[in-house]
Length: 246
Ligand SMILES: NC(=O)c1ccc[n+]([C@@H]2O[C@H](COP(=O)([O-])OP(=O)(O)OC[C@H]3O[C@@H](n4cnc5c(N)ncnc54)[C@H](O)[C@@H]3O)[C@@H](O)[C@H]2O)c1
Image 1 (spheres, protein in one colour):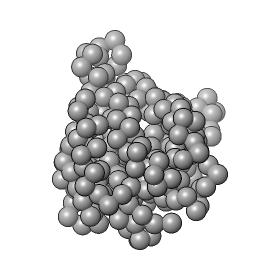
Image 2 (cartoon, rainbow, N blue to C red; image 1 turned 135 degrees about the horizontal axis):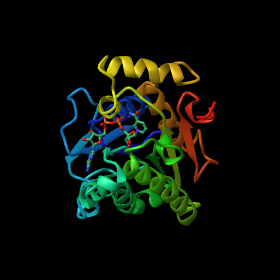
Image 3 (cartoon, helix red, strand yellow; image 1 turned 90 degrees about the vertical axis):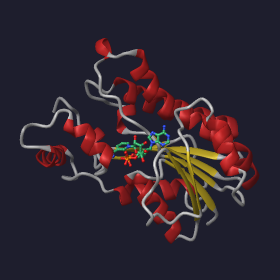
């Protein structure tokens, strides 16, 4: 199957690899982000917009109306919050929840009329933080848990026309991971911390953006995943499978 896919957070590491994977399969890729993507990203259209704004749904709807149709929506835009709960200003909570959870909701709303017509698919990028988390990541974890629950709810409401699934990555080598690790990295630095993280992962390494892109492509492609909806596919090198008390 090929068609037109819209990817949010297109300037990011996982979204860029996802754009390349869809392009390779013959899809046309449209992207949105708050920042410009690298010129190497294979895009037929780009809109600079902030999915954290309440107007994001209208802004995205106007952008989608300029496309020749829509067959899949990939919600990969997200930001991290790194405060402890007791010290967190409400604005910090809102910034993460608005960009990640509400932004995903608004993008899905804007895309629905097109996806119903094309009998298309939504793939939301959640995180292993929806299922297990670490101290200092409360709004991020809550937003990803909300995305998994929203995925399930939409899958039920939009069946049988639109399939809705999520991918829940573990640690993947992108700007977001490196910035996140920096907050607790030892003096040896981020690379040493990533090596330790890799050693604790059953598959013995951190994920590559291209590996998440393949999972996203699988769930978006109605020929490959035609009987799957409402699911969160964990792609984490086995990290969640291991008991943390082990
Ligand atoms: N890298 C990891 O280890 C990892 C693990 C689990 C889940 N994820 C998820 O994968 C997705 C992609 O992350 P990534 O690792 O490629 O990170 P990234 O930081 O490289 O990309 C995220 C992109 O989202 C964009 N963005 C942020 N807020 C936005 C907003 N309000 N409006 C529009 N765009 C916005 C950023 O500008 C950035 O380009 C995210 O949903 C992230 O939560 C990543």
